[in-house]
Amino acid sequence: MFFDRINLLREKMANKGLDGYLIINIESSSKPSSYYLTGFTGSFSVVLITEKEVKFMTDGRYIEQATKQTGEKPIILKGKLEEEIKKLIELPEGAKIGFEANTVSSHIYLNILMKFEKYTFVPAEELLLELRRTKSMEEVEYIKKAVEIAEKALQETLDTFKLGMTEKEFAAKLEYNMKIFGSDTYAFETIVASGPRGALPHGIASDKTINKGELVVIDFGAYANGYNSDITRTIAIGEISEKHREIYEIVLKAQKAAVAGVKPGLAYSEIDKIARDIISEAGYGEYFSHGLGHGVGLEVHESPRVSKLSTETSQPGDIITIEPGIYIPGEVGIRIEDDVLVTEDGYELLTTFDKNLIII
Image 1 (cartoon, rainbow, N blue to C red):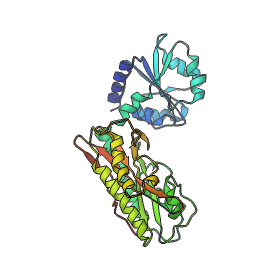
Image 2: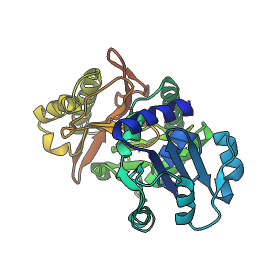
Image 3: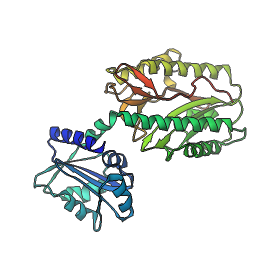
């Protein structure tokens, strides 16, 4: 699997006129790319891909782990990073080397890469992003597993919910349950926002008590085998007002319509428009304040972008989120989010958890 990915990257390097491709993963800054090409999950690695070689360096903490995960004994960092990278490269003077400008810090760029005057470093993060965007069958199965874990955890958390629980307590139980069901960790800090706090699209769980008559936005995801899921459900604690029920149905209608509209070859701005038009026609357009979705995989947010500003077109192998929402400040927030695979003739819905209003 990794050799296939490396060879695909080499093809893209050749098309861009690159002699090498350098990944610098410090404190997990480029962990997804390092993992994608080598299988290594540690927080420090330097990977150099050339036409004929793959060089992998890590530090003493990861000797055994790197050997097991990559299948090769790694080069071990023993001196200053600048000198070790210089020895690692060993390419002819004038070589062009691609690197991930979106993950390399200004310190690394200015104090290491810019000092290698014999080479030209070219921002080329798009090469790997393009490869990572199209998910293989194996990657799809990993994401399906992450979805399954997250959904089991949510059901368990809802089944044991008690009035008086705080948002933080709910989030902690959900994250605990994800690990119990097989998640390595959680995909991101779980969002639990109840009542008026639901109007915060990224309302991280607080000490607020979850009360009867409120809607609760729950945005969460599992992380397993290197891949993420990203799901949102909004649930009711007892009976809610007729107005809030109507808003929920508007969001649900918009979400279902956008999912049904997914097919290859359609501009993502058009898919965004499907949901946005339904919400706008219902009179709530100003309260839908973000894009419809994003790609998900090794990272929770990755290519492609699904929004009215997107310039990308859907293609088979994309896994995206569809997550419209309505957020009325000081009153309520509602969002529903699924993970969706673009197929050759349409889509496959990866998320299975009930989207009809759940009242507990």
